[in-house]
Image (tube, rainbow, N blue to C red; front, top):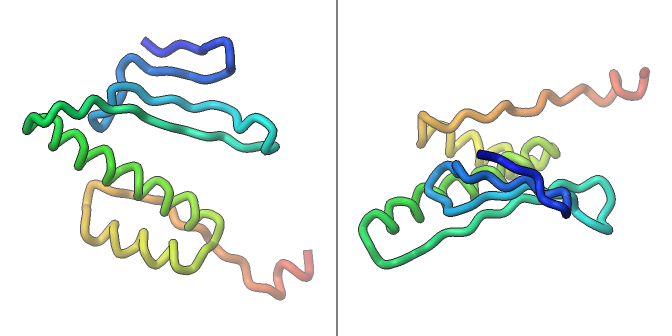
Length: 105
């Protein structure tokens, strides 16, 4: 069950990718920012290792995707490479407008 907390965060009791919990919340004094986080219990078990590898893979690629959406050319290149390597990863890439088109608008 998902629930909103008094601080505006959303916590999920059904987290994905192996996290013990996940949260999305406003960025406080940083303006129109949405932050996210996750927590994990790492007990040294094989299952814990599997969850850690899965969670870190998706967490890192989520950050790369956000930078690609901001049109960072290195991030676009990186996420394209990762999508080729991992077929389950699908990221919508930004469509860049030509400079002249933007200037005309």
